[in-house]
Length: 515
Ligand code: BES
Ligand code: MN
Ligand code: ZN
Image (cartoon, rainbow, N blue to C red):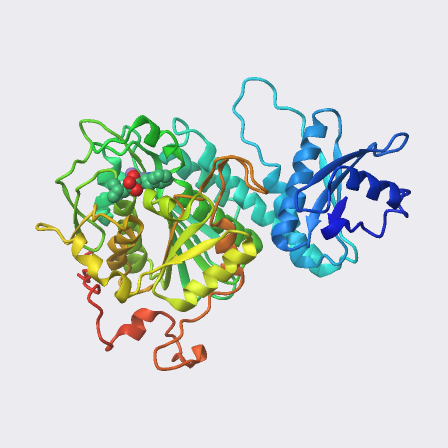
């Protein structure tokens, strides 16, 4: 039962044979004034259900609803261990389709558990009933979108939480293939070392070279019935375990590094939901998968790698491996997949986590339209992002830190670490519309919080889905304030950059492909 701000009670209490004064008194006695997530147990003797649980829903904002639903579901799961089978969850009066979606997502996500225990799993609720006053077709559609979204996030969490002895590159690729085989409009290709060599993936092969578990590239494309442009390519970092390599991490620093494929899991999950929802946008998920291991075959500091497209990198730290595999994938998306918009998701730098903490993702892009769209999508989805600077006045002076005497760049360019990592990636995007999402903080939760559960969070899935659902908007072209002014067929800022002054970072290798 929802308790609104200042203890407001739902109008249906009397109709449900409950005395509003008795309920109000019990809430007052326990100090439950409707604060989001506040909870009071009200045993109701002699009737079914025996248990009424009053939970604060505050002002019923989306964030308050997430807390309300999460607290109710967690309590109900506890009651399920003592025989309850069903949670009836009324939404507050006035709840519209958006509230239904948010609530549906929170029901599934807050009830999520990942266990590999030998004992049988405790009993779980068999059913959750959302009661929505005045629900119409829009609410049903919102419910569907919410459940598809949540199922995708659950899959991402499962991939992240599966321990690295199981979740190696081959296993993750197989999971993707099996899941996408169910979708008519998704084609999945998995490349192994031989094909990666032929396609020039020097970064991915180097990072994966020290492991007995060979690297893979998952390439999954969803082709919609309508809406073929722009082609959005989502790239996700898929390091199934990051020891740091020869530049080895400490035991403490390594402990959570099976979650270093969270970006890859997120983009696979987004593609899954895009296909299930049949969105009218062309999306490809590209996930370079490797285990960054230590062995006699491992790459080492001093190595110079050649990426897809020909750009070279001097390795200074084998622990800065994420950017090496992303570089190949971004270049491949641009040169071989005709990407028009690029978004990468990666647990890339401890610095992003240090700067923003474990609840907020770092968003890097020079494209204001893309930034605003992603920030808006994240706000609606309940995933907070903070835009980091990437404009020349902020970062121009940092580019010198990327210099190498022998290669086009070095991979360990120093502080500010999240920003210099973004600058490392930038040339591989070749000036396409591009956003870089560093989720090193929020990809993992240290404990349960609202709809988040300790462990992998699936962060970025809900944001990217909302963004794709909203339709990928055109860039604002320089000299016009009207995004509709683009000539037909021109959607990317790469085209817009032609003939305009080149910024100093536009030094990407544009060598023609030979194969
Ligand atoms: N996977 C790590 C980043 C990370 C750290 C994610 C902590 C989540 C929590 C990444 O591969 C890494 O090791 N980055 C280095 C880069 C440095 C060597 C330039 C880092 O952030 O220290
Ligand atoms: Mn690393
Ligand atoms: Zn890593």
